[in-house]
Each structure stands twice: as C-alpha cells, then as structure tokens.
Image 1 (cartoon, rainbow, N blue to C red):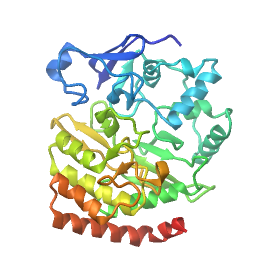
Image 2 (cartoon, one colour):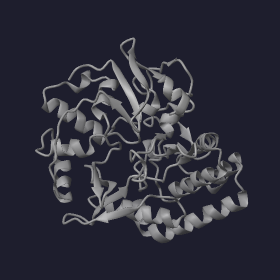
Image 3 (cartoon, rainbow, N blue to C red):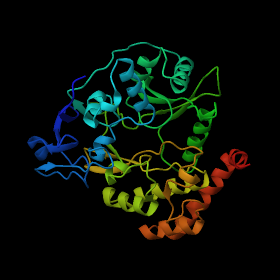
Length: 379
C-alpha cells in the first residue's frame, strides 16, 4: 500500500478537517473552515474549535491526537491487521499511525472516518459463532488461519485484547466476544453475569446477551453504544478518557479523583459524576481492576450540544499491573477502603450520606450476585 501523508477526517459525511504528516512523524490537524462555523470541538481540551494548525506530541500516541488514536484498533484488532499485512507480503512495522488510520477508513469505533481509505480485503463470508471462536484460537496460537480474512473484515477495527467480531443482530450493531488464550473457556458467561449485576447496581449498560455455543456456556455480546439507527449516519462521536487526557491506557497513571474532575468539566453534570461513582464502587467490590483510561468513554450528543458518559463496558473479574486497579481510588490501587471510596465522593462534592448508601447497596448486590464466583477466585 502507498504511504499516507494526508488524510481528510469526516463526521456524518461532513468534512471535519485535514491531517497532514509533519516532520515525517507527527499528524498535524486543522479544522475545515466550514466546520469551524457549523461544527463542534471533537476533543475539547486538545482541539478547541479554533482556526489554526494543531501539532501533537510524539507520545503517547505515536504522533496522533488521542481522539484519532481512539479510532485505531489495539490488542486483537492490531494483531489482525499485522497478520494480514504479513500474509500479503508487507512489513507491519513500516506502517505509520496515519497508514493505520487509512486502513480503518470508515470502519472504526465512534463516528470519525478517514479518507482516502486503504481497502485490504473484501470478504462477505458468513460463519457460525463456534467456527469464529475456533478461528480466533488458531490465530492466537500461530501465525496461520484460513479465517484471517473473515476475522479482519469483521473485527479488525476493534479495540481491547479479547477476540471479537462486529456484527448485526436483528438489524442492530453488536459486538460478540470470544475467549483469548489466557481466558477460561466460559469467560463469556462471566462477563454476562457481571453486566447483569452492574445493571442491578444501577449502572447504565447497553443491552447484553449470552449467545449459544456447543463449546462453552455461551459467548458474551453487547449492542454497540457508538451506533444509533435513528441517526443519519448511524454513528455517535465518542472519545475515551485516554483520548481526552492524551494519556496512554497502558500506563496506570489515572485516579478516580482525576476521572471525576474530567467528567464534571466535560459534562457540567453532577449526575454524570454519580455514574462514575457507582462504576467505581462496582469495580472495587467486583474486583474489576483493569479499569484503565480506555474503559471510560464520553459520547457527544450533537443536537443537545453536550457530552455524556457512555454506558459502562468491559466489566469482569480482572487485574492490572501488579494486581492493582489501573485507576487508583484516592491514590490506593491495591486495597481501596470505604474511606478511599468516600473520599473520592467528597472531593468532587457528592452528597456523602447518599454516597455511603450507594456504596453499601452496591457491595451487597455484588456479594449476592457474584459472591460465590469471587470467593472461588480468591482461593
């Protein structure tokens, strides 16, 4: 494929602006003049709606702004891209970040799209979920799989470490996940149970299902919150906390106090801070410690002109580096106490009486619904 030196960024088929390679490694960005009149800031803290050329740092996103880095696949999706490049005789190490955005084209998470797009394959094959799971396992175990083209076409733009496909379920866009090489075969049932528990705890989640399998207790699936059939293009603009703060999710440098301040400054809503608080409590009591900065996202609602938290996602029993929370609770990542939890609530200005009640209710709900599982994992 040809090297990409310039990309146009679109939102709902409207030109947002242009990216151009600067000093052979930085993706400079400038808003289109019409977008400056009729559009909105796609990343309020880094790219305010102003005339001029914005130039990113090389770190942490290899010369991209975080909002664009969010469009790139990582983990599983990046693995598929690299394997497909090698299969076609290309060295993936030579791909720049802008090259990879061109490969994403119109298939990325969120609403931003990139032109010209670099189309690697065109695959319309249909497969059963069990067959897809078998192909995923082969990809993880070796360089070879007859299903590589299918997996790339249906999951090459996805983020996260676990294998997944982006597919249609009853006319709506869904993500269906499969076990990674480090997962228990019934990880899908576990994530489903966690999602149902989170919903019982008053946490907003998208619709979830456990899809039938002959090999395990089922595959976890969730409707995509970055897609909306009622919208003209069917896509919602979203940015992760990592993208907003221009920080890598691979470095555990976030605290819930910072996440609270980000949420309040961006959304101007204490109700959205309460959502973060509930999610923090759930993550602590349910031992979801892979709560890194890409696992919190914000959606822009264009008609209202406001940012709101996305539904919660990637909720499961997990550990981060050294077994601690990726996002610390008032500075405590290993053994956060109720005092740490309430300190976060107090620092952002939540009602402490209500905060204490919410924390107790979530702890009770988690113990009732996930207690047996948590006890088994701690043995």
